[in-house]
Amino acid sequence: MNILVCISQVPDTTTKVAVGADGTSINPAGVKFILNPYDEFAIEEGLRLREKHGGSVTAVSVGPDSVKEVLRTALAMGVDTAIHIKDDLRADSFTVASSIAELAKETSPELVIFGRQSIDFDSFALPSMVAELLGWADIPMVSALTVEGSNITAESDIEGGKNSVSCALPCVISAQKGLNDPRYPKLPDIMKAKSKPIAERAASSAQPRVATTSMTLPVSKRLNKVLGDSDADVQELVRLLHEEAKVI
Amino acid sequence: MSILVVLESQADGLKRTSCEAITAAVDVAGGAAVTGIIFNGSQQHLAMAGAYGLTTVLNVSGDEWSAHPSARMAAAISEAATKVGATLVLFGANSTGKNIAPRVAVRLSAGFLPDCVALHGSASAIEATRPVYAGKALVNVKSTTSTTVATLRPNLFTAKNVGGSAAASEAFAPSQTSSLPSLQVTNVTRNEGQLDVSEADIIVSGGRGLKGPEHFNLVENLAKSLGAAVGASRAVVDAGWRPHREQVGQTGKTVSPTVYVACGISGAVQHLAGMSSSKIIVAINKDKDAPIFSVADYGIVGDVFEVLPRLTTAISAVTGKN
Image (cartoon, rainbow over all chains, first blue to last red; front, top):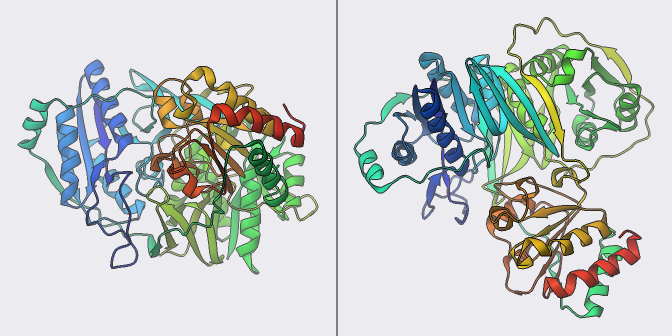
């Protein structure tokens, strides 16, 4: 089966965020960028399905030239081909979804795999947007899956439980933590990936449907009342929760 | 110009996120009409929708909807939005909303504003505030098209029971959707007997400070005294002490309970990303410099093994739960 894995490059979670000169995006200076952690599960699942069912795995990323770095990580992990869709960094998921859907229409993969969310904008939007643009089913938050013939069955995490679902291929899924244990690329594979070709492709002409008007850093309004650990302190905490915060 | 609120049902009425969305819609509506849409709504659902301020709910009936076929539900909701002339469609940002809302945005050529924590403006010119980069920044976003689809982060919008009478049910039969892709839900497994962190009003979470899975009874006992769900940090989930479904944080669940109690959790940025929008945060940690105290409203610097049993007793005395 042919699989398209969609990956993104995001700031490392421990990175400090500062607002850039435009007032609507972060200042990238000094920010360490990494492969979106959930995308590791997506790549791994693509590779495992290929090992079991044959076919090929293509990784795609939409963004500026720097996203080639995460495509090289995917190549080092073992994907067959990598495609860079050249686009500016934009906070609008619709344009990104359109670029990916156009690629999928041309290449007809049987399965498109995303990480469950990209940890920069945390929109959870792309998998079902792409599925809608393609007219396909989608299964979000997949923590287990089996492909048999042209059918996929999966466990999909919901609040307080999980759904067991099945649908016909082609479809879109998003990978939840726990789906698999992503492999670490080996050093020789990392070296080889550096010289592998990365195909380039123009972004969709779809226009953004969302504009960011401002970005600010949150101001903490926490009370920061920190007590000791004596019995009196414990009683005082309970009193504060009961009488001041009125939450118990 | 009107607002469509997508209502989700559960056994005993509407989900709280749906009630929150109704209030949020009424608050920004100005003179615009606010209509609900529900799949297989009962009298109880209509009574609750009315109590929170809706006068009319479009009711889509049929057994086929009980399996939550997302593509078909998205088509039905989009058709309803067009029918009522909605310029704003609101969902709760839970698993259903997160999955279906992006499809509706595509179908309506609408701007999609996910996981909003505040709405500003009016039904025809809505602007939303949402956290990005794990809550390290906030952005104000708006649609550049005439329609907006937004999801609201649970527990950030107050649901106000305004005591309205039951909403009128208007049967709504979407045009043929059987050509759309289908998804069969063959089984739904609930984590029986436990409150889920994503649905809990109070959460007590434990971290590495508990030193081992055998000590989590201290966290569970405190949770019982508060009627709370038990949560966990990534470190203890990765160590296999607790199941992944309890994990709060960027690689777990994002929660905004009324009270979040962090026990023996240092407050790594990944953890803060998942709980920093909680209303009241309480931290118990023996390291006074732990980052968790910087986001806490109330804190106790002390050993969880010493503090938790005494705190549990003191809270039980107030709540009567143990």
